[in-house]
Length: 152
Image (cartoon, rainbow, N blue to C red; front, side, top):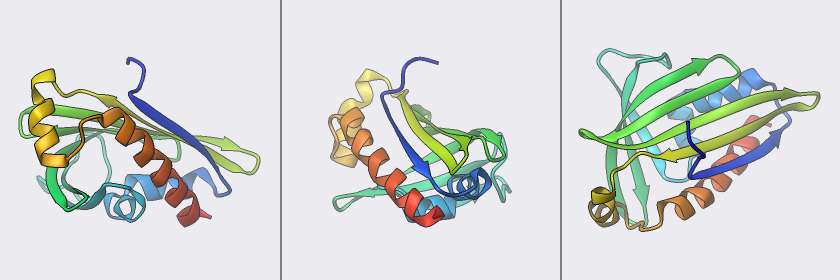
């Protein structure tokens, strides 16, 4: 995988399993995420497993949009990752790495850009964001701070 477009890290005074439960449950992740607000499982899925899909709803400054999320990694208390698509268009890849420490764990949240260049204008119109890497850097900082507060 290439270098992430945006990434952040935070120390959390909670067990890795607690943090994993928060990031791998789309409903609980919505409580701490900056843009993501809710989900609906698809194709009979009921929980985080590789290949499971859900429809995610996002919001930003009065705009709302939905995407399809496919879970690509679900390693209990260690790693959770997913790909985001808008219809047939790949948008991004997200990953949470959870490393145990003596005090709890360190969480790294990263995202990789997957959308094609031609999709920048439609994405701008839908989300109001031109510089997605800068926006995601801020979103990651916000999400990690909320995650820390929720876990501790």
